Image (cartoon, helix red, strand yellow):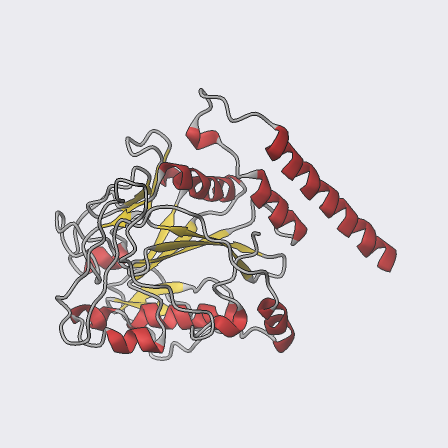
Length: 337
């Protein structure tokens, strides 16, 4: 059936070429086109089609506060997820650690979900979607606040603010996935990339006691490329439980929970290593955080772009692929060229 494989490949390639041609030849979007209705860029759709990923396939989002980055992942036909694109987060609120109270200007950390009703096409910040803070565990722990969004306009007092052009693309990823039937889009917010080196560097941070489940989820996804299943019991998160755990944080945890984990096969791992170099969306990062090992209160805040248009370069450097804990599986490599 090799001829069928060649035919399928040619059809996908033709579809990709047509999509790119439409993007190049078509005029700029009409001024009256609503931002919330804009489709994904044709180049992105073409890259997805070439790798057998449906444009409406399920989406998984990860946010890293210290690095000021938002990742969009999409499901492959085999259920594993591929990194599509990494977007710069223009601004976010507070510093490392979870949001605790209304008005503390902190951006939350934890496991959240975007539902269809959370889309805000009429947001005063261009476009927005609510991440679902506070979740059931936040409420059980007495954390307060509401309306934590990923939105445009680059301004934040607790939300994750993007540039207007980038929120349009991120919004389209989420909108299309929900419209295709995904009940909710998981969005997991981490203080930073949870490598051993970063954990050690932030060992004196008062919030370190809340990072255990985040570290576990980060490591599980590194091994499996499947979004972690999150349960709640005993006023804590349970990551990838083997024994069913519900969403009631006040319920007692099962005596034996176990671990549901499915490592990537060696064959798949080798294929992931050969993925294309990552493509990062260009945009402003007005805020970054650097926490020294001597004192967690030492923070470095980014500033607005300079008058000549150059962006501030004070945000912490992104960890190289050679030293990142998940580099061997290509976790930081995007499929979009």
